[in-house]
Image (spheres, rainbow, N blue to C red):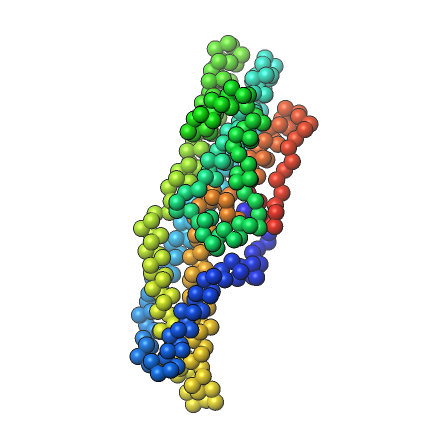
Amino acid sequence: MHSGKRFGAREFINWTRRSIYVLTLLSAIPTFLYFFGWKFLSVPWQPIAIMGTAVAFIVGFKNNASYSRLWEARQIYGAIINDSRSFGYILRDSLNLKNPHIVKEMFLRHYAWLTALRFQLREPRAWENMNTAQFDEYAKKYDVPEKLTKLEDELKKYLSGSELQYILSKKNRATQLMAAQSKELSEAYEKGEINDFQWIQINQQLVKFTDHQGKAERIKNFPYPRNFSSITTYLLLLFIVFVPFGLLKEFDKLGDGTMVEGWTLWFNIPFSLLVTWCFHTLDSVGEASVNPFEGSPNDVPITQISRTIEIDMRDMLDENDLPPAITPKNNIVL
């Protein structure tokens, strides 16, 4: 997540500079050919304007869907924060007097669940954008914690050796950690360490965590529909290619009867670049937000949120050696 006031203009232009090079070339080629006599290259601007309207609608639809995915992901992790706090004090107040060891163990296992979940959500998918040059270059400005460490090393902080090996042998580690929480809770209930009401309360929190995990996995594993994504790309490409051809005659006539007659044609290059850059950049912004867990500067900061939850829950147990909060690097926090 970008934590600054805004992306700087220089930063934004640098991020889109590859597309600027290509768009400039696409604007310059027809302009030079027209200047050297290829007048037939000029096409009426009206059909291109109609195409631009369609492109604006579909790019706007894509950006709206991308923002919805991003906001839903943030809501999911907001719910995880609240439910983790509730889980912490309900568990502490229900079991701490009778079996503080179990309370400590279940707290640690919850940190492990948060860790396993964020590692799973950071796993790359074929449709994600972080492997493209535009996004990969910007990613050098910050660190993705899940790429710098291994899940096994992180889970060692919270799990015993035998449980660690058991969890690592499973495909969905986060699910199995929540299942272990349920098993531990059931054993405490059978021993009479918690009553019926407490068992129901704590179990309801576990069900909520499973629900939150499933919602996050749904966003992670189901991309923005490929048919919508593809048609947006194709229509945008057609529009970008045809815009310079539609403006040739208009800019050529602009200087008629003035001292710059014959030279206003060259305005076609910067103005075509400006129009096509706006549309292409709007599409790129949508692409930057459509996968909210991949580790881009526009994603939900799930690592920071997980650390905040751990600090809050350790504080509930009056622990003194709290882990440090995660701070932004170059205005980026993940």
